[in-house]
Image (cartoon, rainbow, N blue to C red; front, top):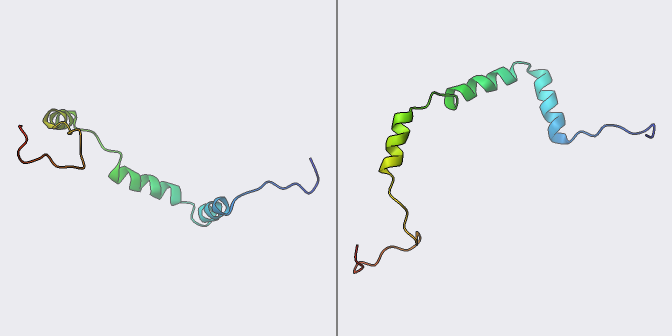
Length: 71
């Protein structure tokens, strides 16, 4: 390995590392924000009801059914 070899970091990685160094609580704040929106208990009964009520999609989704077609 040459003496002038230096580990490369992209601009984005440098930015994130600088941001984390300036604000050490950033990751904890991100986890708290994520838990507000995503980390929730799932209602399995409601999911089952939604699956049961689902209507199958037609073959041609971009075209409407002709008005004189049999249903």
